[in-house]
Length: 252
Ligand SMILES: Nc1ncnc2c1ncn2[C@@H]1O[C@H](COP(=O)(O)OP(=O)(O)OP(=O)(O)O)[C@@H](O)[C@H]1O
Image (tube, rainbow, N blue to C red):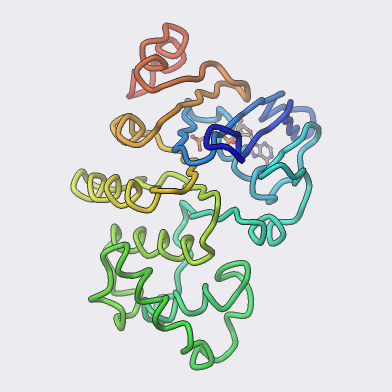
């Protein structure tokens, strides 16, 4: 696959909820090795689209192609296994487990932390080196033995990124990586995402335009389930249709 080829493509991807179309004939193309932002006003369909891409929702119609393969309707664990990892907006950590144990569990499970977490943590000691490497990448190596419950909010989000990286995904999906953060944590997260995006494909949703402008090679704007505009950040930001869509929102 050449550097400019699409790693992820959707064709007329559509999802209805009892007659209401949350995602409508979306044709998205994410080039391999790029960072791609999904933005749009509340209710635009961003979360629904993420849920479709990761198999948490089945499309009503349309296709999703990942790495040349049709993944439409596959269950989440299959899609994860093919190389798509997702970091959640909602914290999904275990307060009592140490940071290193979180990573060991994620490395021991082919689909991340969601399965087999009841097995003895000690059995996963062989993943120690890799766990420490991942913690180091997100700047948490010195906190490896600390229980996750003791972390500050920004550090918890960094731990979630390390967990998503444990699968060594081809495609990393980040759901509002800077949600609820103060400016210092936002800037630290931007640097962190830049570092882990090197040589990888990333799609993220974020409401913070500073984050979008700092990270995204391309931006897709959704409105009412449809693609309103797409292109480099500066172009999209200056698009009158986009400005109108955001009127009444804080980012207008
Ligand atoms: N399970 C569901 N059943 C019915 N309607 C739904 C369901 N999930 C989402 N919707 C509707 O689909 C639309 C898109 O929602 P979605 O959460 O995807 O938007 P969003 O762009 O992620 O918004 P936000 O920025 O507020 O998170 C909304 O009108 C929402 O009410």
